[in-house]
Structures are given as structure tokens and as C-alpha cells.
Amino acid sequence: GAVVSQHPSWVICKSGTSVKIECRSLDFQATTMFWYRQFPKQSLMLMATSNEGSKATYEQGVEKDKFLINHASLTLSTLTVTSAHPEDSSFYICSAVLQGLSVYNEQFFGPGTRLTVL
Amino acid sequence: QKEVEQDPGPLSVPEGAIVSLNCTYSNSAFQYFMWYRQYSRKGPELLMYTYSSGNKEDGRFTAQVDKSSKYISLFIRDSQPSDSATYLCAMSNQAGTALIFGKGTTLSVSS
Image (cartoon, rainbow over all chains, first blue to last red; front, side, top):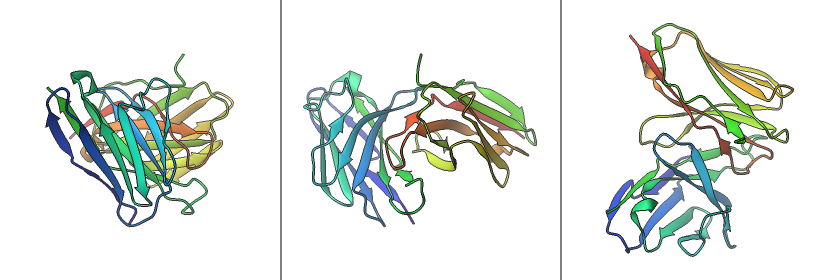
């Protein structure tokens, strides 16, 4: 149980286009999901917190108009990279919080989406 | 100073060795400490978590937290080639909140 999927796993797009990445909790409901970004040989950096039914909370330095987050249901959050540029090329990973499993409220991570912008 | 510091390695050990991975942190408010394993081009997989100070053991893995020194460790006994991966420490001050990750240590276990 507690599986999180992401789609697509890999995408290449042209500069200036928009790309949507989906994050789904397959067997549990998640009111909170997180979006992280990981550059090669770097740590995962939090981009935003996605809460079902409300606006996402973005970390300092992350452009909310460029990285649109929609948490439309308890099992789905989407990240849309608008007008993508080569510097947006990265590994995007989501996580979903499973509340009540333990005192820790464990996060389960998706397999990640590798975005390459040409 | 970054909130979480972790030596990126790489760390190479022979099969059967004891591996010690470490992280230091600066935020004394951190209460939850996690170790994740990440294979190339995959999402992180939780190995162990510890609340506050102390030790926790799970099979070949032992996690230690020393809050007075702001230092956490992961020990892997009888390391196997399948343990070859990047190990990330992560921390938070509240349950279910976003995690602050270390940079990750790349481990290679040779047979």
C-alpha cells in the first residue's frame, strides 16, 4: 500500500511550451502533497506545498505564476511548468502525506518526472 | 550555513563492511529525522525515521540521533552490493510537514 505515482516519468519539450506533471496517491487520500525539485548531484529542494481545496504555498524564490499547482482532489495534484526554459530542466518529485499511519505522518514519494527543455 | 549538511561522497566499501553515514544540522527545532535511499532516476524510499534523540534499529540498519550535537547517523551492517545507492538524510520540525534534505551520500558496495 501507500503508493504514489507520477506521470509522465520523462518528458522533453521545446522552450516556451507548458508541461503538466501529475502526482497521484493510488491507495490513500492525501490532503497535503509536496513538490520538490532535484538538480543533478543536489538535494531535493521544496518548491511548494499543495493542499486540497486551497491555494498552494510556494517557497521563497519559486515563481507561482510559472509553476502552477492544482490539488483538485484528495488523490491528485498537478504541477504545470508554464513557458518552460532550459533552466527548468530538472527532476521533479512529489510526495503525499499519509496521515494517521504513525506519529510521524509519513510522506510517500513518487518516482519522479525528468523534464528536459530544449 | 545550510540547514542540513551531508558529505556527498562518493563512499566505496567492500561487501560485508560496516558503513557509517552522517548529517549535521543547524535548526534545533527539528524533531523528526529520516533516512531515505534513492536509486538513480527514482524517488526516495524511506528507510528509517526517528523522533527526537535516541537509537533505532531495523535489521542491518541503525539510526542514531544526538540532538545535543545536532548530529545524526545511519549505520549499515554487513553491507551488500544491493545497498549501492544515494542515501539522503531529511528532517522536519513537525509531523507531516515538508522535509529539509541533505545533499545525499552516494554509496557503492563492491562484491
